[in-house]
Length: 537
Image (cartoon, rainbow, N blue to C red; front, side, top):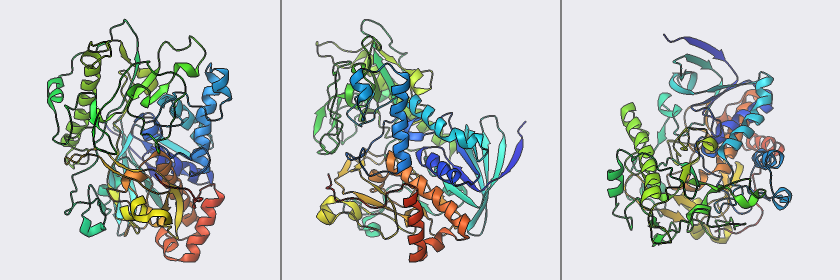
């Protein structure tokens, strides 16, 4: 038997990923009552429950993110300094990188990030300002014209909660609130005629979205056998060879993301020791897979503490191309989510039994999934890694030609007069469900326009994650960790600003003086809205 309850609050944040956490913290920091939902047991989204180390630009230690995002990064490092037996060199390194991974200057365990995020939200929970509803998802929204009046949530026990709030922030991974509330949105590729983007197709492709991936963690125990049960669909995934792919999907060969040339990756468990260079502006870092997304490196810790490194498998071989999880049919969604999981398990089995070794043999049976660092029993992330979901039809939509280094050159990205943040990353689109290979475009340091957070019509809902006003193409550079956090933080601050001043987001956006006043608010809160003069890559 299900039960129903009701909650009234100032700000409802639906989705507890990085954007949702940032939005909730921003609103609670300014004294507002907040309800934050999360479908898993961990807050943090792509950083935690999806287990993706932070993809960041090369200047992240100096500038180019919000002060609160920097506090998050600092707190993760301090957690290791406080509780782990680091080497003296690692302990004294201001840029401590626990995993010495090549993908990021801060490769760490998902469980550590989850614990740190809990410590950030904990004080506001204790004060009664923030209520976190875990294992909870939206199932219905009611509207009065252009206003969302309430959202119905359902938790894992079947309890239904109606939440009423003057402002609602959609920070879900897939933009789940948008269809529930009838908010105009897009999916997949827009057409070139619509956006004018050089990389857009001639016709719109709404079902053509970036692949999702189900990430897992591994260590290697030489001489031991940790081979999992052969996945039921292993033969199917072993036979998949997309036309644009240079080899079967389950192999160590995949395209170079930037040149599309075939590239056989090296894979040597525990074969790379010591510091590595984590700078994707110079090297994507994926030529050697073990150290690519390594989250614990033996060389970071005192001798004997770790028997093996721990690495994250988030490689192109687990990009799921058979469909996406945005169908209105729940059975179809479940089928594709299960398919992504089964493909990842099949790749793990391939690594354990068939992957080529340097000695001429095949398979690494000593590869052991590390569920403890992932919060799971089987070593796989709590949720699939979602690169792309629904995006609002916004007051401002960022296009490829606004940020492309080739188009913009030395003048830099379009500098929006309503900037409420900054970001930087290449336009990095993974292979897609419509049969496209990588799309990789060099970008220049870019800006987050206020108008990208605001739907064209609905007046009290804001986008606070990967659902902001980008195109399919510019989603490729706006979807990463620090930009998602920035978008959520700006949305949370905007909701508070509108409540404090009796304005709507549209009224703030429409008046230059109102925009300037709000920009002073975000800057005072530690949000960078301008870039120093730096180059692109």
